[in-house]
Length: 410
Image 1 (cartoon, rainbow, N blue to C red):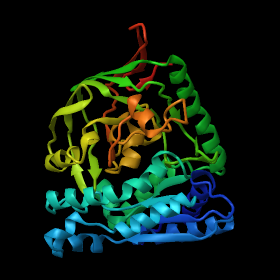
Image 2 (image 1 turned 60 degrees about the horizontal axis):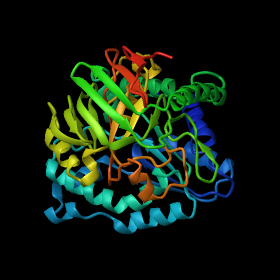
Image 3 (image 1 turned 180 degrees about the vertical axis):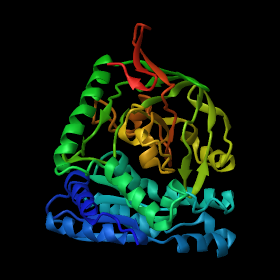
Image 4 (image 1 turned 90 degrees about the vertical axis):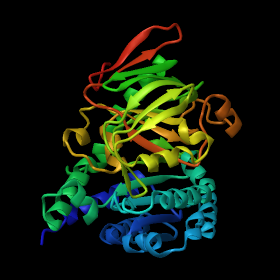
């Protein structure tokens, strides 16, 4: 039986605790993970306590248990969720508990179930989780997302390999993307951080009014929020703790003006959402809202997502990623947003990041007034490729090249 590289698994756990979530002495930590990722979870807990964590609490998921609900639960079950649990999570974040998520689930776990039930269950969870999610999206706390190569996920990426070989192959890809293949991952991340910061600095200096995207099936203008700020790499929480929210990360991102998006755009990679796969998304925006939508697979799921609330059909984030990113160069489709979004420029419908404004003291009302979007959801989907050109429009109407054939121009 082929085994994961335990030395690299150990490095990933240390990197996540030390650089990713950056746990502080005495700080509690909440970890969510699939039961399958237990080998990584145990290492994460060890390092968290070694770094001085207060109390580490894991919450496990299991694919059989998840599917059991959709097979056997009454219809009324899908309009409910564990509100008591999300209330507890919100209170934990309110008391400065850090957050860590280990992603390993089957991207197609719920693809064979009733899309209406999936949508209703997702909406109920989003409603209950929103108060807690705001602590994350506003960077009130330090948080981090990493991955573990679950078997079903690995077999989707590498369908022609045996179970063991697929898991090992996906594990190696995760380790490579997470920049832990060299002797000093902490330095690797410091160097990578500087490069991302330099790109964000240039975009902030340009202070574009909008970005224009052109490529196959794409002719889109995205206005940028008033007072927007591009960020990338590490982010300081409002308490001043530097954290890397996503590992891996290859993006710089900001908040668009949710009322100033017009044109058409086509996805370039599948979107895995709540156990369903949505492929070949095509949408048209008018004055910020999606007015037309199509998809070759998962159309019903995506259509229901767009009806979650008023802000679900508007943009909350845009992100720039060069086609030459290490994740893109593997040539793999990961069917996992954490990886696919870091191989491609992408958009996110739903909730914006209030962190992506120069003025960090803005109220919710001021964020909305400046063009920031509000929603129960935040879903990234990929639109970048080596055929995408992006130009920035300055406040005098001049166009300045930003990306040419998927690569930075500056």
